[in-house]
Amino acid sequence: MTEAIPISTLVDRVLAELQRLHYAPHSIVSYRRYYNRLLRYAAAEGVGCIFH
Image 1: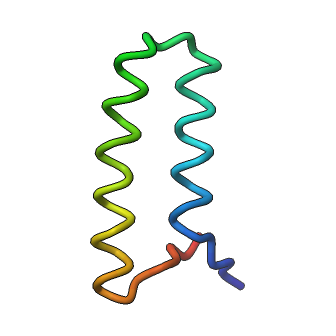
Image 2 (image 1 turned 90 degrees about the vertical axis):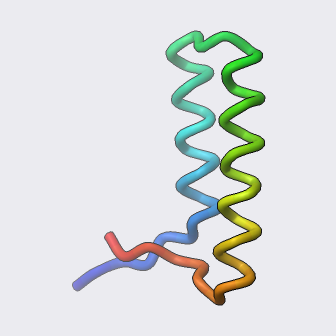
């Protein structure tokens, strides 16, 4: 059985992992901006989950 994971949860996990790996703060801000655009696009298209 597949589990639906909200895209926003995946984004949060990725950003937390970047911090854990000691990415530069500027890099994390850049990724956060990109992911926010991705989340807005997904919301506009009616896509909220990825199946795992």
